[in-house]
Length: 159
Image 1 (spheres, rainbow, N blue to C red):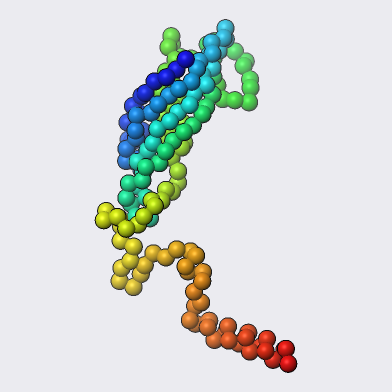
Image 2 (tube, helix red, strand yellow):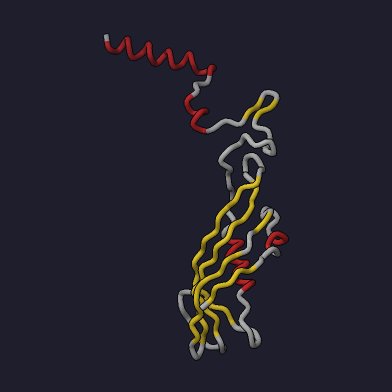
C-alpha cells in the first residue's frame, strides 16, 4: 500500500507558468509480479497558476488516477498501455509523477473575480475587456440603418 506526501517543487523550473505547487498526496497500491510491477496511484494536490485574463494567482486543484507498469526484465511485453523499464535495483516514481502533473497544467485558467487589487487592468484609454455575451448583444452602429431596412422590407411584404 502507498500513502505518502511528496514535494515536486522542481516542476516550477520546467514549467514557468506554475507559480507554486502544494505537497502532493500519493495513495494507491503496488502489485508485484514475476515480470513486472504495476502501480495503481491517485495523485492529489493543487497548483498556483496565473489567471489568463488578470494574472492574479488561481488555485487549480489536481486529482489524477493512473496505472503505471514497470518491467523487471526486458521482454517482448506488448499491451495497449505504456510501460517503463526498471533501471537499476530501485523503481523511482517521482519522475513519472512529475510528468503526470505537468500534463495536468491547463492551457488557460481564469479567476472568479477580476476586481482584485493585484489584477491586471480591465480597461484603459479607449479599450476595455468585454465578455463575449455582452458583445454579441450590441448592434454595430454602422449597421443600425441596415436593420431598419429589413424591418421596412417585412412591413411592405405583409401589405
